[in-house]
Image (cartoon, rainbow, N blue to C red; front, side, top):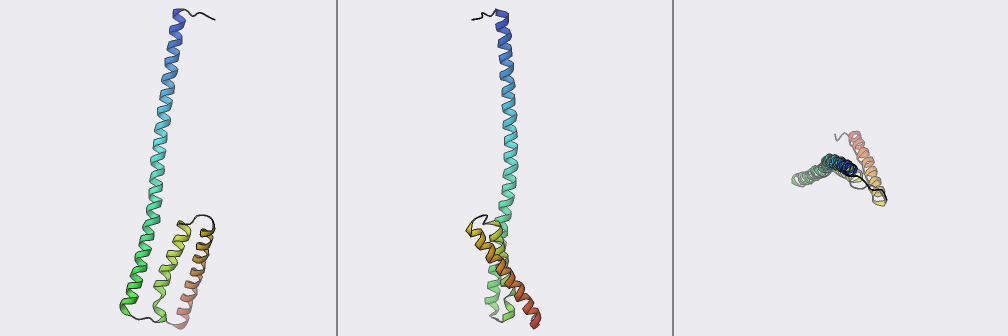
Length: 133
């Protein structure tokens, strides 16, 4: 076993202190970087969630307004359902693309959204053909 002199012991203690200080500074910089990344990702997530649920609330309000208008005027002609059909189309598409991500529910909702989209487009063309619009 090697016996260190007092000078060597002091040099080793100084090197150990320097290394500990360097590691502490490195840990702090890593922690600061993680906090910045966390704040950045929380901002993105909150923006996505506010878009996701905010647009859902707008679509549901639009749907409720269309139903209320339809019931208020009591005019149930075939040409009065376009706004309601478009609001449902928006709702189905929003649910399909923002709330279901994988698996069977995603496939079912995307299929429903596409079928409803085709129905609304067909209904719109039929209304133009009959001259209701």
